[in-house]
Amino acid sequence: MRHFSALLLVVTALSARATTSSFTIVASFYPVYIATKNVTRDAPGVDLRSLAPPTTGCLHDYQLTPADILLLERADVLVLNGAGMEPMLASWIKQHPHLPVIDSSEGIPLIMQSSLHAHLTCHHPLPHEQEHPCHHPVPNPHYWLSVTRHMRQVENIAMGLAAADPLRAAYYLTNAASYVATLRHLRCELRRILADLPQRELITMHDAFPYFAQEFGFTIIAVIQSEPGQAPSARRLAELAQLIRAKGLRAIFAEPQYSDAPARTLARETGAAVAMLDPIVTGPDDLDAYCAAMRRNAQTLRTSLTTPLPALSPPPHISKSLSPNPADTCAADPTNACFAK
Ligand SMILES: [Zn+2]
Image (cartoon, rainbow, N blue to C red; front, side, top):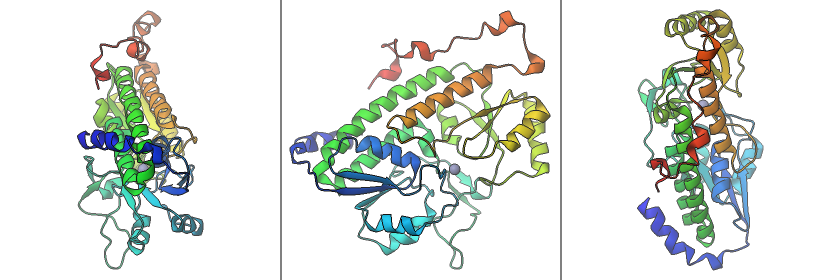
């Protein structure tokens, strides 16, 4: 952070030299694209593209298309999520060593998991396989769902772009400082929304939420799809139903990018509600898309985890005594430590 601030001071003096010549930035997929969109805001001549369309979702099984190759060929810089999210780009990058590549996960603490359960991919393919399940821990790549890690990701993108395109460095670093401040406020708001929930154990659709859970004090006790996009077996569903009943879970969490059919089956079996948590791998082309989706997620959790199961419904006067939504008072409390820079 100290390096980031120092760099910002130096390049601000150079801002008058910002050029209008074209500079093509390719971001690998949606959350990296939205972060980079904020970092490059109003920078003249920047042509920002997302490699995977914003409807793609996670890149766990993504294959490069001919159009992707054409876009990569004209990129001036490539911005990756890193942490194993883009295995399909490894060989292309190796064959194009001249292209600056920003790994926005650099220096960010990652949660290590067994790929046999998390459908993660090794960085070191075996000689006869491009990808294979690892029998040792590999990073979970969904770190942008921790606001703290996402702040660092935004700074990494800005510093990488400033190095690759010094003439627009002042834009990148100033925008990043402003967006990180916004994210710091968002983190405070989410902490307030998610405080004091009666239930903090979650079952989610795929393994996207451990960073979010770690940051906001939840525990992921199971995922419905151990392989993204693949329906769970009947045996797996029975195990999950037993777990939901044993824990008395009020809700199970599907994702907008996957079918909610398995979650609905579990809901019918157990009486738990189905709610949507968005891993923010698809969405609108908006600067505030990440913040808006994180707020929706937090409100969804609050609503779902404070709504009693039908069989356990208390009388109306008790349910009204649930604590008020603390987000309403977050911005009005300037003494809150979350707002300290
Ligand atoms: Zn994923």
